[in-house]
Image 1 (cartoon, rainbow, N blue to C red):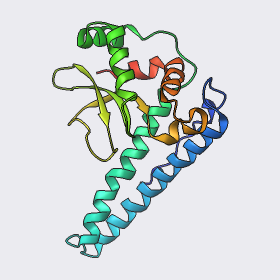
Image 2 (image 1 turned 60 degrees about the vertical axis):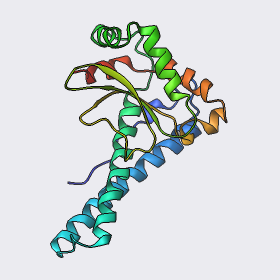
Image 3 (image 1 turned 180 degrees about the vertical axis):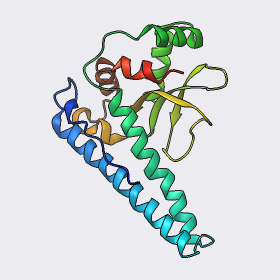
Image 4 (image 1 turned 45 degrees about the vertical axis):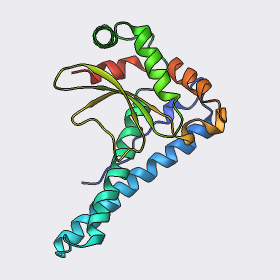
Length: 191
């Protein structure tokens, strides 16, 4: 079964994100979907041809992590954007408060995580064992994910997510991101 890129064009017109930035970002996402499908097809073909023990198969398998996670994290990111749904829902608010002490402390930590030097992702994860919420920095999307972690809120902080509109002003991008969080989407991810 091949993956199909989702249509996020409804985000065009969102405050703080130009159409050019979003359309470039959608094209990048489409590339992750396309490459995920190509790698899955190649991997299946190599197994059928009994090439599973080859270095090429190993590299295809490793590359799949990059492409698949790039696809999926972009979907989570686009889905938790849109016209702001107002305030954080009660279930998420309760979990954030339990985990960080207050909404303000969580937000301060999340913003600081997103503002760190480097490229990657700021992700609010839920630990499925304890239920605790933790902000993580994901440097490259094929590594550093907490085992079993459930992504709740995702912010792309690779340059392609903000440079066209904000240049080096990452803090201004983070401000625009917060103005456009679809809290309902984040709330629905809580377990």
